[in-house]
Amino acid sequence: MELRMNSALDAVQKSGIRVFTQMARQEPGCLFLTLGEPDFDTPSPICQAAKDSLDAGETHYGENNGQLFLRKAISAFEQEKHGLQYASEEIIVTVGATEALFCALFGLLNPGDEVIVPTPAFGLYESIVKLCRGIYVPLDTRKAQFQITAEQLRSAITPRTKALILTSPNNPTGCIYSRETIQAIHEVVREHPLFLLCDEVYRDLADTEDYESLSACSDLRPRLIVAQSFSKPYAMTGWRAGYLMADAPIIEQLSKVHQYAVVSVAPFVQRACAEALRWDIAPMRETYRRRRDYVCARLTAMGLPYFRPQGAFYVFPSIESCGMDSVTFCTRLVKEGKLACTPGSCFGAEGFIRISCCYSDEILREGMDRLEHFWSAVKP
Image (cartoon, rainbow, N blue to C red; front, side):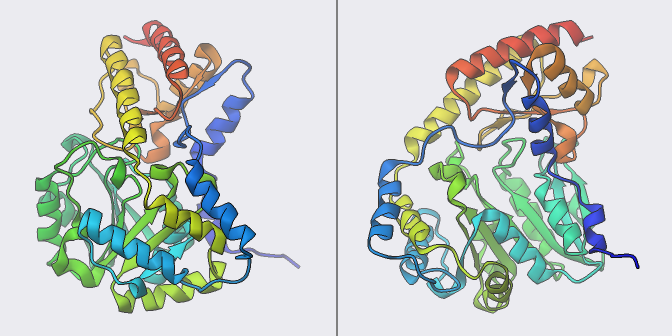
């Protein structure tokens, strides 16, 4: 008798970022510029809020969609900081943005539904779409400097298209969608019955006052789903906390997925999240900007082409001219240069590598020295 598991798992691979990082860990003396995890500790007032909650005995089941005090705080924060109007009843507190995205896509997709994802993109999207038995449709933005045109988007839409995922600032490029891109997307999606899933986990790490998002388009509200996370802006990756915002009828359905998948987020974690919303992240954002500027200056001096990031904490240079694919390049970089970066193929963009700037000035300086030495040996 043959035991058979869910065949959707066969189409999904383990995270390329994690696999490559683990491989590099086995190389003695190797430095890492792979993970997108802030090197800051969570600010102490946020930690203290969780401790106080534990001391107060908040260790029991909470509300499925999140404690009311946190959902109200999120609602007020989004209205005040970003002009997004979602009532507490239109918010689900999730186990990080990962659960938020899984919850949203599981709630949207029927087998064979197509999801358009502009690439380069975080590999999580493709994996979740496949696990939900949807069809992943990459939209290559490399020739348009990681922007999107109306013609390009129209050409990707079919009668099976169910959703479009937008990430701005983008992982891995650090790109922010321009006003022209936002207008183009808005023009096209109004013509088609599809959902818009806006992954905005890097939104508060944008470096420009011109930041715009489709999530602010009120006429699209009935089809918008916004995923957010506490991980990146507040250095809370290990807390596993995020949230979803959407129109009430959508949230009502998605709450079923959330309830049966995780029940609820720990109450003491939610106290920490409420405190985080009061924290000023400007100093951390400035540190990321300064580090990115340093990495960009070093890449310019090396002659490695890149698109200058405007948010998040990544730089995505092209290594195409050396004639190696990105996995070969990064493998040799680990073995010969003792430096780990992430292959662009992990993001659906061959010919690039991702450099994370979530590391100390000393590590970044040494890392750029090692990259420069390796590049000088392999460049054409």
